[in-house]
Image (tube, rainbow, N blue to C red; front, side):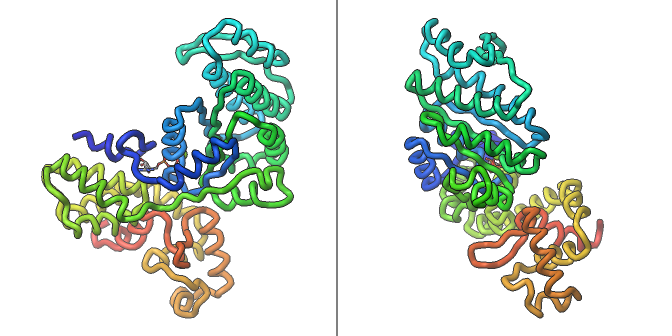
Amino acid sequence: MNSIKYFPEGVALGNAFINRENERKYLINRIKSNKHSVLIAPRRYGKTSLVMKVASEMDMAYCSIDLLAAYSEEYVRDQLANKVSRLVFELLPRLNKAKEKLITIFKKMKPEISISAFGQKLSLSLSNSPLQDITELLLNLDATATYFKKRAVIFIDEFQQISQLKNGHSIEAAIRHAVERSENIAYVFSGSNRQLLKQMFGDQGRPLYRLCQTINIERMAKDVYIPHLQHLAKVRWKKLLSLEAIEQIFKHTERHPFYMNVLCQILWEERDVPSIEKIDTVWHTYVKAQKHLISHDITELSLNQRRIITALARLPVKEIQSIEFIAPLKISASSAQQSLEVLISKDLVYRREDGFYYILDPAMKYYLDVVLWEDIG
Ligand SMILES: Nc1ncnc2c1ncn2[C@@H]1O[C@H](COP(=O)(O)OP(=O)(O)O)[C@@H](O)[C@H]1O
Ligand SMILES: [Mg+2]
């Protein structure tokens, strides 16, 4: 059995994708009525997987842009130009006349059609005003879709990066100008920094205010995973896992979608149904091997932030400022609160629905609470 296929570390496609019924329905309805959305969830919770699933279910033209590395308005413009100049060809009927029309819509950008290994592409000459180009690219894309009575989805990931750029607000305004006029293109923005995204779409003074409805993605429930894991256990070992074993998987991964896949991927390579001990060893070995990633995040923290995160690794709490929590840490209530806010803004600490603060990444939690206290280093 190819366990990577069933438990991928990247986007979950095909049978590897489970659940998200409500989120899918909701997003499909929004796209159908040409409304725009912003998906907010920490890294590796399933934003990209959800959008790709929805795009394939709707059988719609679709492009995805990742702004993770965005460093300037030119970069944002170039990314948009690159994707838009390919996406337009998915909107055309197979007629030569259609291409002539496309050329007229984009005529200000002196379009030429070129053919690459990835298919056809419009070569556009961009101006020295990236902001104007951004608006024009998106408006022209919509004009193309509207003319040919087609619809498409644009997915822009790590969108919060725009707010960090020198000209951030102007780029937001350039995008808004096109998005609010869009008739046949639905936009899905997403990103992993919820604070920045909430400000971008929720603060009254910001250009994108009230443009989108927010969709939060959470971890999936146990009863979603149990039948899925049992089905794959039968495929793999022709046996079911014990409920204790499944609980042990949940205990380590805390149902974080990425870590569920990582841990199960290794377990499903085993010759026999894994025991509790096996699950523990596999998780332990895996987390230890992540040392370089985890220590990078920890070394960046201030001493007080390390105090708080180490304490939370031991035990999630509801009241950060309570005496029981801060007294053993020898830290004042206000510094505890301040450190907590930084940890939250860095997405290292999260507040659960039940009000408890805990460490977002279960591997980091285990590293801080178990691995670092081992006898042998
Ligand atoms: N609906 C799902 N069913 C199963 N696994 C999923 C699902 N959504 C995400 N995952 C898994 O979670 C991890 C992160 O998914 P991804 O879509 O890349 O998240 P994001 O875009 O939020 O960073 C991957 O390992 C992916 O396979
Ligand atoms: Mg993603």
